[in-house]
Image (cartoon, rainbow, N blue to C red; front, side, top):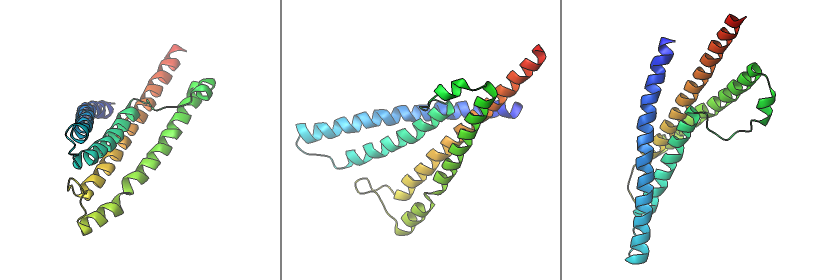
Length: 173
């Protein structure tokens, strides 16, 4: 339990950092899109880089926002069937779905490897900003790692809560 508490505190700390960066990312999207509109339609001199940076910020926001959603189990789901099941079976189905999601995330973590290698070898950069594409591909990997970490934390918390509730039920007997 001590290790789980330490991991939970670390997870909360990471979540605060991610939430802060998400706020900055969303603010950046608003700023750069409005800047693009202003320069294009008011000054008639469009900026070429605002669309690219807004797109990258949007991808960042989705990846890291999804990790926060996984931490709090806030993804869209159909609970009608789950509500008909016993608490124990419901827990097993949730854990099975989390294992499947974890397997998918492991594949996603490994998938940018070829892109990163190719981008490093060819020294590919983004068109407008000149950011090395390897850095952007690493951002994908980091986002999936955060998702997997928060999913594991959610699974551990579910297991811990069920062990505690099962112990309380046995004491009540």
